[in-house]
Image (tube, rainbow, N blue to C red):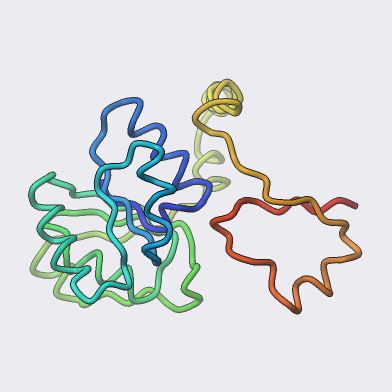
Length: 182
């Protein structure tokens, strides 16, 4: 599989799980400075989406690893690059919009490559499950909160400071989550 925003907190969780269960994942980051974050977690295949040869590298790696599934937190033109690089019959699940732009995919991906782009929102997915399935999901997630599903908290800020901080920028999201304190 392929994941975008791989240095994000969710991306790191996926990297830890992939390493633990020996799953081949192609991790995509937007800056080369983020590569060590993932390699330190055991990632073997890290690509930089801002590199000029990103699509060709992704195409070659996806073919060799038979990666036909991608999760995309970015959207915008990157979703189209994923579709261009992934093999026929692939699925891209978009769960974020970090690009701040509409997803852009060449229609040929759907017509000639039989690819699929779908959306995912956890609340909607859980609402479709039975109460027992929801309960078991929460139990499994809770069990892993101190392990593979750990998030880094970069700082805790008072809610009253948010307007001033937001105007100047909160810093790179790859540094960790920011907790707002009432």
